[in-house]
Amino acid sequence: MLYGILADIHANLEAALVVKNFLQQMGVEKILVLGDTVGYGVNPIECIELFESNGTTFIKGNHEEALLTGKYTGFNTEARISMNWTKKNVPERYLQKISSWKETMEMDDFVICHGGLNDPLYFYTNTRTKAKKMFDEFQFNYCFVGHTHFPMAFSLKKEETLPAIIAEEADGRIRLVISTEKRFILNVGSVGQPRDGNPEACCAIYDTKSRIFELHRIPYPVEVTSKKIIDAGLPSSLAARISRGL
Image (tube, rainbow, N blue to C red; front, top):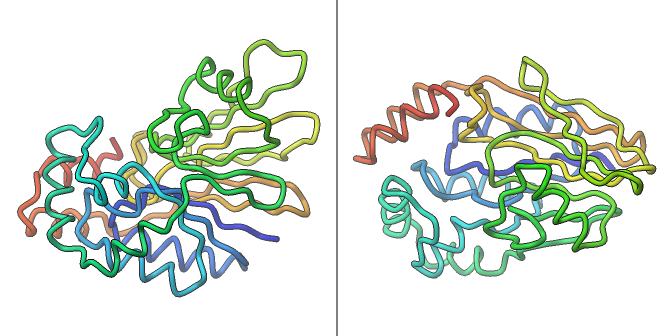
């Protein structure tokens, strides 16, 4: 099976479109979206519909949880403003769809969630110590996550006390073979709001046959998305940060 795995679209339709087209060109058979399809951007409905038409599996993220509950746990001012805008612009029928999304799922020989298995919606798997906590507390071979907007992977052998970090290359990409001798946590970065200094959209492809995991970066018209954010009356800082990838 050839999986396309992505996270944190954040209602960025322009980034979502180029990612979907790329995955189709690569022959991806199944797409998994690891949460935060909504929030920050101005096209939440369009982004859901874009991937929903392909039988995509959606996982709930903390922004979906905030949309459903009105509880803005950990949200800064800009995130709260954008979520209030989102609540006004997402019809009830989409809320019903989102409420059916699970927080974790097992697929083949791996598991998926938004943040981390310790706390699927809110856990930041962004340090060796946090990754070790997840490895210690849960039994899994490989886990794909998002939430940090920063692509990174952790691997752990049985004899190791702390996981090894597998960082992205200078061009923002990662390529590795998922060895059966190790366990892995793989963060697929963000489609619509990368924060690693590279504004290009992130998406990953995992081939269960070859066991090759590849993280790709794809340029998109950031200026179009930025203008939409400003025209909608949302904070200009949200438009600026996607231009810088921060």
